[in-house]
Length: 281
Image 1: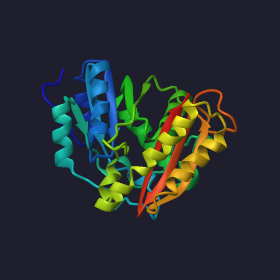
Image 2: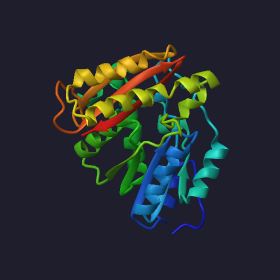
Image 3: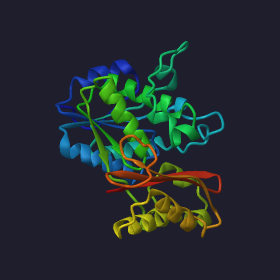
Image 4: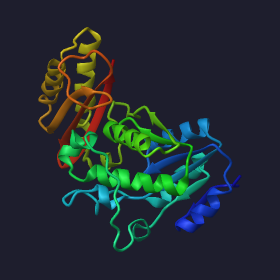
């Protein structure tokens, strides 16, 4: 068992320090700029595992050519402080050139699930996600790995990849952590101006209105989608990219809700793209 938190960058150092951990081992992959949502994953991992590894890596291959890789918020010093306070055993902060060396040409790709929703809006995004998560799994060899429900499609894709590649890893999806007004916690919330931040709670209010209708007996998926659109239309700063009411596992759009469904949306507030979702049923 390690004493205190160990920070490693090189893969060979990770391999060695990993041998010092008592199992089961939990993994919390992050892109840094941590908030309470990330730390809630660590806390859950601490409850279920003897040891916890966190990774901090802003993965370039999941960003599109016109997305925010260069401006993605970073604060490594604060991230390390938060992880140490949360009781993480090892933090791995690999360099980009080590994760993607020259002539890198091997990719992990999940089909079907990645052609929908976020995948249709951000071509290549999930290929980057599944490739880097696969590399993190191979390097850290966790028993469990923890992801947030806010990125619901990512969670579904990683579950599929884990099954298909026979990883002996339990994928744990933890509930979305929210601000007091309901806005889902996200590193990208830092982009919002004060006025945009006030407007951003419209995502939560739109989803909540649809959930209320569902709880009152509404099972028509298009009606629920329209409720979300109608609420969003009341906020002039909100520009809807998509709203979906789909099967929880396949992510295929529904006509009528009969089992577990995922109500999700992507909205621009100014230039900041925000996503959120509720599980219905």
